Image 1 (tube, rainbow, N blue to C red):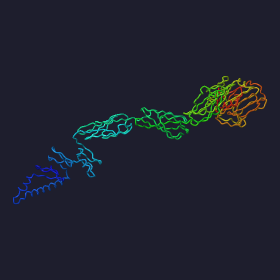
Image 2 (image 1 turned 120 degrees about the vertical axis):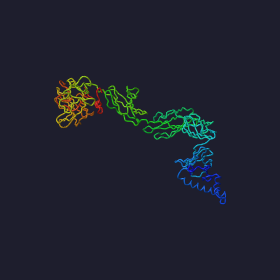
Image 3 (image 1 turned 180 degrees about the vertical axis):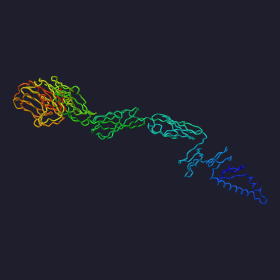
Image 4 (image 1 turned 90 degrees about the vertical axis):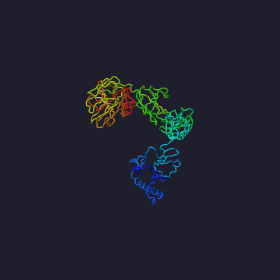
Length: 639
């Protein structure tokens, strides 16, 4: 009902009875005038009946108007006659009166029947707070006060606890609606009963200040809390690894005084030890039964000041390398040999000892506990000729293994009685004699390219005139005595039928004693020929049938023992012998010359390469020939 749209009526007010219905109150004098003043005395109603009639009419008229306007517009209650705001269903304004909402105690509030409508509003006379119902609870909107909060107290769930624990603070106060906690480590909270997780070590005071609209108060007895630190190991959690079958010893340390240490160790796969427990330092022999490192974990429990902490200490137990067997040496030369051994499980490298005695009381310089890496052979150099040496090896990982068996060997004196040696390591021109007396002349520009060892003499793939030659002096020195010739060669094409390649020759001379090493195809059968001429007699030559593969290095040796034996070797293996090779061993080599890659410097030129040519004025032994071959690797002067 909008009273602002009615003419002003003196003393008229809108009121509400106990049923919530609105009534219009009219002064008694006006009602009397309506009932009596307008009627003749004879027709006048009794005053009481008149009042009842008029009141009933006014009430019916009033509610008919109210019902009509309640849905079409808002209601304005004021003394100015202003219309209600268009956005308001109820617009109340005034300068001398307020609005009262329903008032009840907390008990009465809690007795309201469910369901309770969202945003129901009351004034709680118990808490002196305006409250609204939302989210299934009554929430304070604003609280009234008559005085500042009182009886303020602050307490802690524990006054002594350990670092990392959870602490709950409890606040209590009368008349408070705002809570403010402060404490160590910049702690602040606006909750009445806050919870702190993972508290830090230290001693501190948690202070509670409460307030309401009338003021604030601080707790007299604040919460004093001591947080003891957790004991922590200051010794390494990953101590140095240990070797299998050795003692693991670990000393735990902690900066917190009075700390006690207890440990336990479970069984671990790959470690033969059973589980164990103890205090302080473990002293255990750990045995790794595998071929790989195995981690063993010790679980330490540290206790101090009522606080306990658990930490893991992990140690790696490495396997000991398996025993190794040393094998016979090869590549034995005058100044070197190759030590050999089998591989060892778990070894990451090997150590080599070389000595002149079986007790290894002293060592060859540079070969005492020499770590040679993860290999199974090693070239030992810098030795003396014709000397007995001993060597042994040990497998190594983080745990060194034991010594192998001892191998002995005797170095050769291959350089003994050497006449000349040509390495062909040049890049152009003549070839120097490494021994020093017989340099070679380069005929028709022999080239150089990669040889068996470093460079080698390259005669091309269709040689017709290229060779090296030396004067007659070296050739003459080989007659009527023992001698040996060694060389490496590689053919690039095969000799045609009726032709042959000459690697080394000494020719011509008188009487005729032609000396040469050849790869021949004279009769259609390819052969290595260890050739010697025999003036006035039958040629007794070593012929070894073989079809050589092009572009493969071969090692050939010619050995003559002073008219008693002629022997040839191919790749370290004898290919034949002839006893009493010369019927007429006397004579001289007068006028002879030495040629490499030709016969007489005029024919039988090799197509391919020649390298590492040596001449001795004695017969090499089969062991020395094998050393020169060196399992196909070759060995170079000074051997």
